[in-house]
Each structure stands twice: as structure tokens, then as C-alpha cells.
Length: 505
Image (cartoon, rainbow, N blue to C red; front, side, top):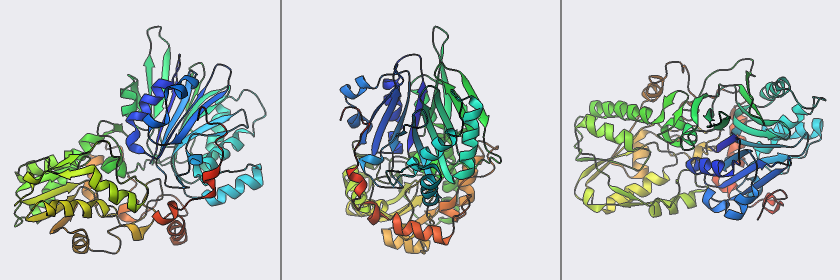
């Protein structure tokens, strides 16, 4: 998961992009970057590892001039954590293009060779996003006319859709033209568009990963970018859009609703907050039916994605709901931290148990999901040390048994706690007296009920069904070799790459 933002404004957009990235920080903590186009048609770039507030200082912001810009916050699933792989990426031909990407391509290795052999383009990092940018650039390079027409740009994106595979929501800028945004033909990764009408009746446009980024800048939510659709907004604010896929289908990622998205976002026509309430209702009903003889004294969420679901579970079970953990809000989200060691260390720094809510009680803990089991194990140890008699654990999501290939950091099946384990075995491994998971059908219904036009959801981590071509045993074995936690934390030569275009180190 990453977060992307793009704005076409009538005045300097650097502060607006910065503000939008701060509310998308939950989508990535590894790196951040902003690129603008100044009044001399030159890119201004600042990107580095770290949180938004740390990457951009006042002198960086002063250099990021221009009425057109894009931003990115990074959560690495491909490549490494090197600063050279922070986004946006840039190529100087044709015209000059900068691009930011949320998602993961599944045919990157083949594309890397193709880009070099056919287009003579060099890829300088291990990032699939740089490959995607060069594919897009090579397709635009096929048009000899200047400036490019909207149809030229849409034709290039159509060709990109036929070449690349996987999940992608992208924002890009083309020097002398404007801002481009496009979404993969399955709509796996989210992307929305909004507008803001100024007092002088000028219209500014914004695209972003989540609607909450529009809200904080007073942009009116227009709609989701459709699967396979491309948006082109010229530098003078003319909006063009076109469906660029031959066979678009809606398969939004179900894990966005479980964990990644902010509850105040509207995504694919579904309120994330409402979907989590429904998850709690359905899981509460399952617990009431299957655990009739289980004595529960109190329901406590593991903050904070599970709070909405836990409140509904407590209501259905007619048990007290309590906040039993105090969260240190200056520690990031543990699931998206790179490596098991970092995740284990951060759990204890992130949460502290309020002993009075646990001592001598049979406690039902509620979490949004259980992935590697690292967080769950540490939290249950903490609760046990506070004197809880029994610890029961409920997951608002089903068992995660399969790798994710579309941009979530679950590439290796053997690193998943539910891989080749029964529910009882998982409970024993993490130290729970009893464990229950949401049914996949109930989880799907929690989203479909709120938008019946969504006929399918991307659920591969739960059911092992991958919607794009080429995801076979050989591909998954390659992931296990190249993208395990151990491999991702190994230093690479790319860490020494020069940040040639990085403004104001």
C-alpha cells in the first residue's frame, strides 16, 4: 500500500499536497515525495525516507513552486527501502514525466527486459514503479506530434493496460501538458477525484488514494476513478476522461476495508466506517451462535482499526465495552513496518495495557485481522501478565492463508500465522484460550450491502484466487525467494544511487 495525490490548482499547490499526504500517512511510513512543475516548466522534486513531517522542511517547501504537483507516501512491497526508491520517479523523455504509483506489478521482470531491449530505457532501481513509468513514457514517445492530444494520452494508457499486469493506481505529470491519473482494469487499488470551485469561479482538481484527502482541503468529492479509466487535466484546468481498458471489471481490494483505509473515507461508493460496523455485527452474531458456553466479562478492541467492530460485538453480546489499551500515537502502524524485528519491538512501545480492565477477567479481544501473528502474540503476553483469567480473541477478517501480490506486504505464505494451521493451532501459537475468525462470505457482504453494484472483491489473501494472469506456483515461489522479510532487509547497491533530482537535501 502507498498513497498518491495529484493537484491542478490556480496557485502554488505545495502546501495542499503536503497536507493531503499527512492524512494519507497511514498508507505508508517508509518514504515521502513531492514533485511540482514551476512557471518555467521545470520539475521541482523533494523525496527521502521518513514520515511526511520529517521529509519536508521549510526550505524544501519554498523550492516546491508551481500550480501543478503530485505526491507520494511509500510502503515498500517491491524493491528495497533505499532512498533511491522513494517516489515520485522521473524520466526526461519524452517531454519530462514524473509518476507516483500505488500497487504492485506482477510481470515486472519481463517488463524490465522489454523496456531495455525495445525502448533502450535504463531502469536504475528495483522498483516496479520505475518500470511502469518507463513503459508509459515509451508509449507516449510513439506520437510524433507536439503537444500531445488527449486521445494520444488515452491511447498510450490503453497500451499500458495491455502490457502490464497487476494492481496500480497512478498519478503522473507531463511537462507542457498537465496531470494524468489512471487505475488498473480491475480497480484493485483505490483512486478518487474531486474539485474545488474558487470565488473567481476557477475550478481546481485533485486526485487521491482516499476521499479523506479531498475532505481536509475542501475539495468536493466527485467520484471514484473507474477501473481502467484515465483522467487527463491540462495545466489550464481542462478535464478529460476516457475508459482505456477493453474489459474493465470491478474487483476492489477487500483488505482496504479491513485495515488500510481510514474509517472516514468513502471508497468505491462504500463508507469504510460503515463496513467495519457491519463486520462487527456479523462477527458478533457468529460469536453469539458458536460460543454460547463461553463466559466473557468484557470486550476490548486492539486499537484502533478494530474499535468500530468491537463496539458492535459488545452490543450484540450485551457485554461491557472497554478501552483496555493505551496507544502511543507517536509509533507507526506495526503491520506496515519492514521486518519482523521492527514489528516485534514496536508492539510493546506502541501499546500499554490498563491492568484494571484485565485483572481477574475473562477478556474478549477484538482485532481487525491476524497476519503474521507477531502483534497478537505480544499483545496476548501483555494481557496475560496483567492477570487476565482467560483471553479470547476474535478477528474481524478470516484467516489469511495466501500471499498477496497486489501491493500488500504479505508475499510469503510461510510468514503467515494461518499458513497450514488450523484455528486451534493458531490459537495455541499466539497464546489464546479460544480464537474465532470472521466468515469470508460475511466479510464480503459487509461491503456489498453498502454498494450492491460491487459484484466482486479481490480476496486472494483469504481464498487464494488471483484475478490477474500469471499468478502460478512458479511466480509465488519466486516471491518467496525475493521478497521475504529477510531479503527486504538486506542492503542493496541501490542504496548508493545518487538523488540527482532531489531538491534541497
